[in-house]
Length: 134
Image (cartoon, rainbow, N blue to C red):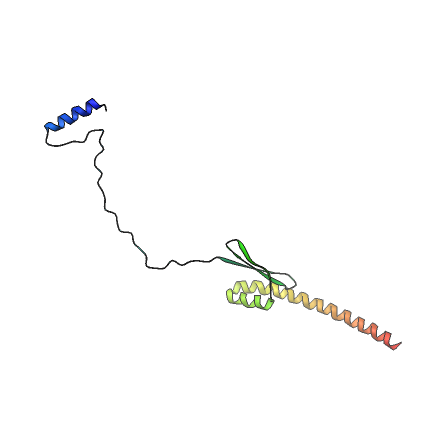
């Protein structure tokens, strides 16, 4: 609206006892009371994210790596197979079964290798015995 229209409306309002807002003036805002924020008395728990990766080979050699928030803390730490087995049993039955399967395969591989070496040792002992007789 133009200023002439506002002036005319203001003069017309002066004659009446009730004031009416003009188009240029926004109506007064009604303030709503704010609800009080609920504050918790519980302590916020600080979480720490650590990732432990245990890697094993078919030969039964195990290593561990520890990272925190993507930063490597430990790497290549040798871990005994028995400790891996015990830790897995403590964590969960399914984890334990999976790791025991890998450990059983490693045990069988070592037994087979031991049998080969014992057979070879027997041959070497027999060859040595023949050399000593002569």
